Structures are given as structure tokens and as C-alpha cells.
Image 1: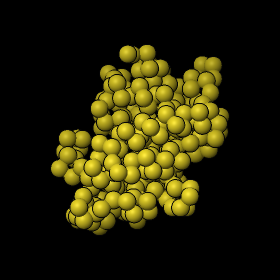
Image 2: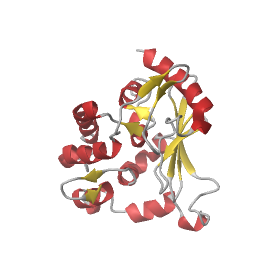
Image 3: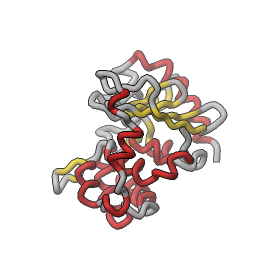
Image 4: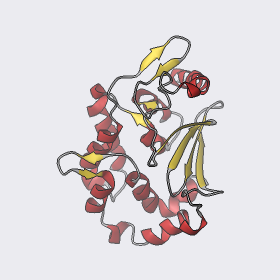
Length: 224
């Protein structure tokens, strides 16, 4: 599936996509999906959401674990050497850079693979970099910049624009990392965050794949 094929159901897709992200309103003590239910006028913007959802993720075709044998997926090329893809299941959404699954939004979630600086670089190579937002990690010093960036992106969606600042704040809350990324010799950028594939000290089984992806990401960052 291409991004262009989603244009006919753009509002439905993005409501679903954001609702499956980790995020929360600290003051109201609501998760992001609950906030979206409050602020989006479904009758105006996504009146056929339930029908679309059943078509996009047909429950009757999923196995007992909520996975599809032939799931819907999106793929985009970042560079000649680096692709990203997203695979949609009932139980979780999986994110890939080349062949490495960098995380998922399921019950046993993995996230925070991509630094905010890398994420900003993706936009120079991909017009739909917002699709990688669930895998971004934001350090405390980047919070305000990230909120402004995400809010500006959400203003491009009529159903989100009036509450873009509050939604961006909820999203950033779910993307914050406890400790900054660090660079290790012969490995590259790594994370110390739990549930992060890039935490190679805790999850060494991913070491070789992370090293390979880091090489591509460093090249991507060099391209202006």
C-alpha cells in the first residue's frame, strides 16, 4: 500500500494512527486516544470510521494473536540504502528500518528508536516522515521544539488544528526519554531506555542490526 492510496481515507487513517500512539494528558489523566475522542468531531470528519476500520483491519481474518498473514503495510524509501515500512495488525503496529523491526505499538511495546534530530533529518528525504513519529525519542531539552514542530504538523489536519497544541503536548509526553541518547565506539548512537531496540547493552541480540542501521542513519544525517 502506498501513502497515495490512503488519501481517500486520510482522516480515518490519521485518527486511527494517532490513537494508537503512546501519549497522555497529565492534567486530565487521559490517554491520547481518549483525548482524541474528546476533541475530534467524528460526525464531521470521520463519519464512516467504524466501517473503514473493519475494512483496514478485518478482525475475522486475524489469528488468535491478532496478526494477519498478509497485513496492510506502507513503505517509503529514505535513501538508496535505507527504507522504512509499517505493518498493521490488530494487536500491534510494527515499524521497520530495512529488515530491522525498530519497535511496535502493541501491548509489549518497543519504541524510542529514532532520535529527534534524526527524525528532523528524515523530513528532508521523505514527505511523510510523520509516519515514524511513534518511534521517536525526545530528550527533555528538546521538549519545546518537538511540541512546536508536532503542533505545526497537526495544524495541517482540519480535525486536529484547533487542539493542535494540546494534542502535541500529549504526544510529546509519550515520546520523552528518561536519559539522553549516547554514542558508543564502533556502534554509534544508542539508547539506555527500556523497551528500546537501540538499547544494545540490555538487548545485545540486536547489536549487529543496530550497527548496520546506524551507518545508514549517519549517512542520512550528512546529506543536506
